Length: 206
Image (cartoon, rainbow, N blue to C red; front, top):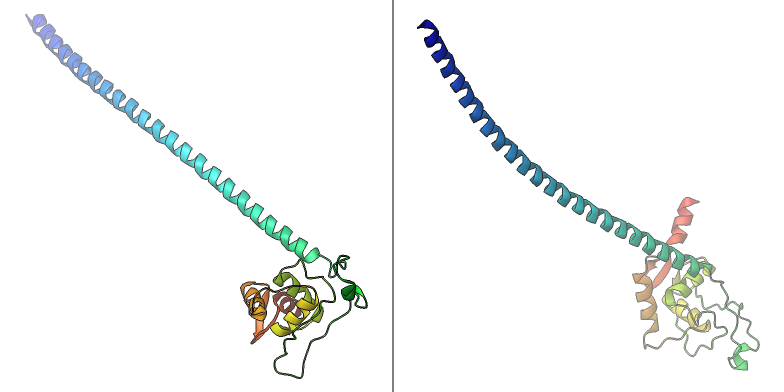
């Protein structure tokens, strides 16, 4: 009788253990399913993050290469501009009266240091064509370098026209002033008078 009661007790305990085991197994399956689902979501997020990183890297490479290309192009243009000779060969297709007794290297002086504002000369005959194919800023850079001092727009106009530059507007000195004002290579030292920024830098360095 005692053995039967013990066996019944043990069997009941076994059933309880099996039931608890079954519940835990069911819970484990649920957890494993949830874990698998979470892993899939994590993988999807990882793929999305990788694609985003790849897109960012591509954009950065494009921006950097574009920036380097732009800086290289600007540097090349600047070097080419300043590497041009100060004198262009005289045109052979111009009238003889323009080539006759005026060599292209003859200095032309319209400077008036004793006057407040230099005058602008009209009907200037070009004695060379060194500035015929140059922009205003390119030609003025050369003139200011050669002069070694600031120049008034009237002086610049006289020298530009004598060097073969042609102006189409009615106010060429205004065109010169606007071009120099917009270019960081120049600075205004007095009303209508400009100088090179780099000249100031070289003076400070010396």
